Image (cartoon, rainbow, N blue to C red; front, top):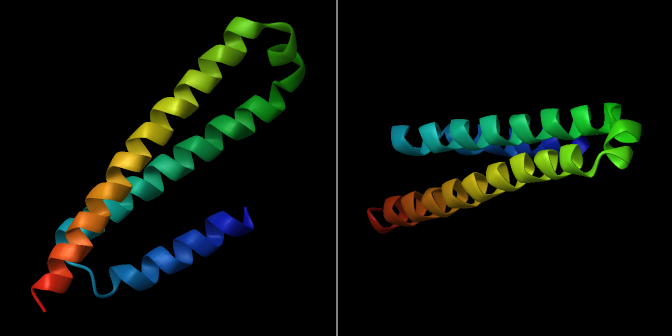
Length: 89
């Protein structure tokens, strides 16, 4: 949780000087991170059940992998946008 709060803090600092398009990507990344954390919390609450049911565990893993893939794409887009902004300076 501490890492998430630190990530939010750094994200907010960067948003202060970011272009609108970058802010949208930051917001999308924050949403994906929050969704991932919610899934992990649900997994922890259902840990015993998931240990007994491999298919349910696989479903959670697939959901997390999907969010991770989306996050990677958004992070790459954000880097591209930042580089573009820096080249315009």
